[in-house]
Image (tube, rainbow, N blue to C red):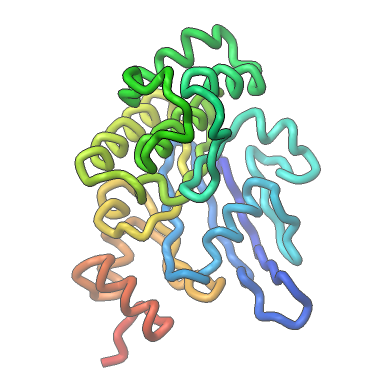
Length: 248
C-alpha cells in the first residue's frame, strides 16, 4: 500500500516564475524510509509542504493514506506528524509540560505514560524541568522528535532531523528512529544534506534538481546507474551541472 502518492506534482509560487516543483512523481510505501535529496532550491521543502497539506499544488495530485491532505485534512493529520530544524516549539514551556500539552492536542491515550516513555527513549530526563528556551539546538531537535512521535504516527515527515546534532547523538537518534520505525512499520519521508546518513538510513531516495526528478531508487541503485562512488560526489555533480551522469 502506498502511504504517500505524488502524481504530476507541480507548484509555482507566482504565475510567471519557474515551478518550484515540476511534474514530480513518487510514492512512499508502508514501512519505507524515503529521502528527498537535492541542492537548495531543488523543491524538497515545497514537496514536503504539499504532502502536509500546507499548500495546494498548481497541478497534479498528492494523496496521503489515499486521502487529500487539504480536503480531508483532519483524517490525514491524525495519522502523521512532522519535525523540522526550522520549526520551533513554544520557548516558555518546560520540556515535560510542552510534551503533555501536545499530547493533549493530539488526544493521545494515557498521555503521561507516553510522554515519559519518549523522554526516556530520547534521553531527555535531565531536561524535563527546563524551559525550551534554554535548550541547545540539539536538545531542542530531540524534543521536536519526541513531539512528532507522540501520536504514534503512520507517517513521519522529517526536515533535516539531525542537522543540529553532534555525530554521536545523530547516530543514536538514527538508530532509535529506525528501531521505532520497525516496531510500528512506520513510513518516513525526510530531507537531509548528510549523504552518509542517507546511504545508511534510507531504503529509497528521490533525487531532485530545480523541481524535477533526476533519479529514484535505493542509494546503491542510483549510484550504480550514475557510475558514482558516493552520494556526496553525485550531489556535487547534480548541483554543478544539473545532471547525475558525468558527460565526460
